[in-house]
Length: 275
Ligand code: 13P
Image 1 (cartoon, rainbow, N blue to C red):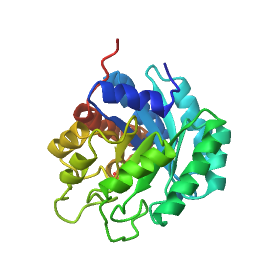
Image 2 (image 1 turned 135 degrees about the vertical axis):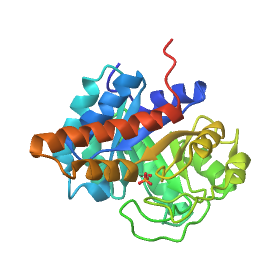
Image 3 (image 1 turned 180 degrees about the vertical axis):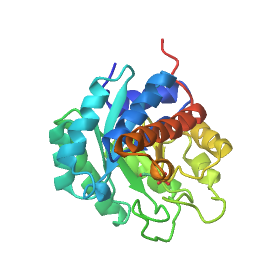
């Protein structure tokens, strides 16, 4: 139980036809809220923090808090660095004890993305940690900077997995971080043409906020076994803080909001069937 490698979590989710919710956190309130949700639903989760958020939540402070919460949880919990952009930051997360790291080379030429992912995998192996990579372009960065979305090419996905042996691969299928303008049009045909061709690698759906329950289920049925949720939690926590009577009331409201968002998504992504 408790602190568990992402590889193990995703393998089990895949076998059970569900996805593991990866929830972005930036404070103790959010960490405790997500863990409370996982325990209430008796289902594993991943706690994650993106490199771009570290100016708000320094890695040497939030990282140990995430790990301690995971170790003390009543259910398996992974601790993940989301959108790692530099090798230095990735190494720091591994040194602290993160069980997985993402190297986001999606804006690099394919050859360079493959080579740098391979180097991150070699680094992570020494720590027993798993690695997530990304191909295609997800519309908008994690911090809201606009990007022109570009669907991943299924042939690139197959090649990327074969050449790197990466544990998890985020593939852009028309998804975007942040709040969608209009209804997201996800390219399930792209996922269909990858089906059964990516070996043991789990696909990852970024930009979970605003995707319908029906589309989440369809994405899971087509191989997406890690789903990232950030904006929905940050917005709910921010809303919940309004009108609080004092700091402690605000903290309790923020924790409850993070828990509610995580529970709502775990309900859609599927609950663990413990053997
Ligand atoms: P949202 O902010 O759209 O939920 O996306 C989260 C995400 O993909 C983090 O990497």
